[in-house]
Structure formats: C-alpha cells, structure tokens
Image (cartoon, rainbow, N blue to C red; front, side):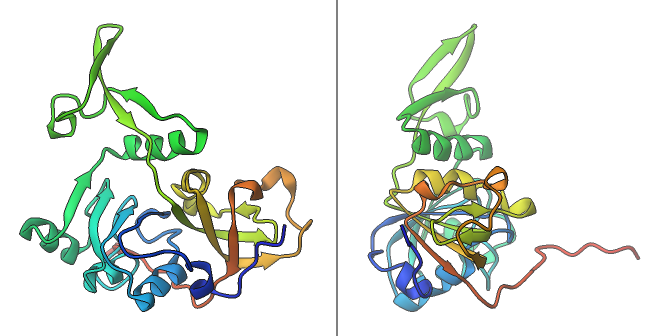
Length: 230
C-alpha cells in the first residue's frame, strides 16, 4: 500500500519517448512542476501531452516545448505561451484544440470506463470534421472518445502514503479527473502526511487511483497576468 517514491525522477520512471501523458493544472495553477522538470531532464521526446494549456514560455509545459520534446498538444487553450503559438503556426507542433468542457469530459469518461459520449459542443466547426453526428431532441451532437493515456501526472496540496489526495482552491480543476483517467497516476504533493491524518470526508481523489506519490519542493506561485489598479 505504500506508494511513496523519493522524488520526481523516480516517479517518472517508465515514461518513454513517444508516449501520451495527461498533465493536470489550469493556467499555472495546480501544475506538476517537479515532474515536468524531471521530464525535461530525462530528455524524453515525441510526447503527446493532454493538458488544458501549455503553461508559459519559461514555466510549466512551456519548458518541454522549448526543448522540442512535445510533438503533439491536446489542449483547449493556447494561452500566454508565445512559443506554443509559434510552433503551432509554423507546423512544428501538431495541435488538437478541444472545447474545454469536452476536454474535461474525455478525462472523466476515461476514469469511468466510458469509451465515448455525445456532446453538442463543436458541431458546425472544424472540431466536427470526421466525427459521428447523432441527433438528440432534434439537436446535433458529436461523438467524442475518452482519452487513452498510460500515464497521468497530477499535483495536489496534501497526500498520504496510500495516495489519497486533497487539492486546494483552483488546483481542483483537471487534476481529479486526470488522476482517475491514467493507467498509472503519479501525484506530486506540497505536503505528504501520515496515513490517517487526512479527513476522509475531505479527500478529493481516493488512493485507489494513485500508483506513485512524492513530496515536491521549490514550488513557485506564479501569476499568469498581473492586473493592478493605476
């Protein structure tokens, strides 16, 4: 039952070039910073990354983009990442832009063992190209498939040795959905506590979904865009 590993480098063992990874977070909130840096250091390439967005130029998934380690991004938002935009427009990076709700539901469907579902989002746009359409109550819906990723990497506020996780604030975004969806889920936490310390009523991700966990370090509380009064 003890799933604790020493650090990010140990946690990502088994991740190889060409794999598909799910990475939690929203903007710069709740992203698995330590594991992303470990992937940069490991030099794995040709990754397909599923994430809401790709961080910024010098932080988050932007670090992997800088090193040309990502061949395809599946995301809902290009965001504030100029390098992401440059690679996409130049054709260096394959990008599959997905409506945000559809992205979340494809994660949730994977965690629930549902292979596909129907949604009205994207009908009549490029998103619909090549997809099955069915009508419900007279409205067209697209068939979308659940994600299939061997690894999910998430970030939580607290966790224990059994892999139970608690997220804080906005970090409770894609992280819980992706934690359920990966065949192997890696969790990095700001604080690793003894088993029994977490209130069962406050656990967001039960440990049954997590295979590896470690306490991270040197977390940055960055702000994507700082807006202040004049």
